[in-house]
Length: 146
Image (tube, rainbow, N blue to C red):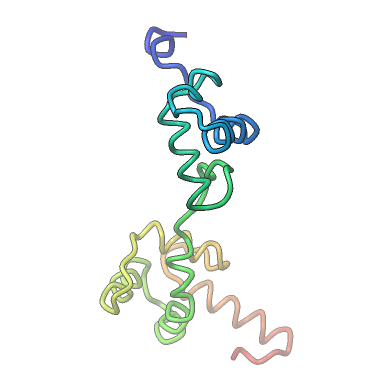
């Protein structure tokens, strides 16, 4: 452990049980935020935020940490993206990003790339190779290429 880890220990989310005890002390026992914080070994600001969360949300669960919280933005444009890909099967990733931006849907190239990967459109250089492969497989299976 280095000096900064000692001075600033890693914070953990407090459990819902501790939060509930502190909020109950404030709301039902009339205890001040500072007194509740001292009793439960947390800051008065933590207690204040838990009381606020209780009033606003009706629960004391901590917010989720990490993970993807923005992919819904590009997923909302799914039909538009597939329409563009159908009309321009050899479009490059950056050209797709630029076309989306021209239509008011602004995303970074890496966001577009992750979207394509999620939907099985992994790219070498161009999407046309992958789309052509899909059409060939459908034709071989006796299905129309749509």
